[in-house]
Length: 119
Image: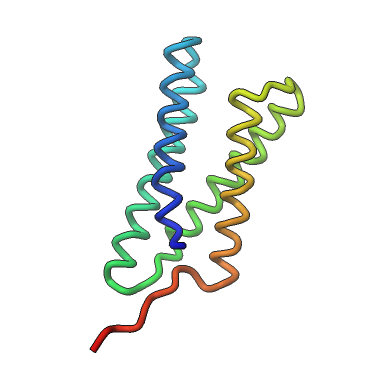
């Protein structure tokens, strides 16, 4: 599986979660954190998709994705440990931990597999 296949939906989930947090609680932190991180991940997913279209790997996109997921894992994991609230801290922390593992796997296996050209 290519990193952009999961990064784009992951970014969209964060954006939607940030908007919902703002609408339900008026939380500017949710709006800024969710939308900001989500947009950054969408940008990274787009860069990775474009690089894949050119039959290359985008290591910049992979680095951005990994850092975003790792930071969210840490921040939301800390918040979950303090509050024990499953929503949103536990869910976002868990998803982010899974995504961090996926991105580290992609780094360890040299990025996206680029299929050989058909002749």
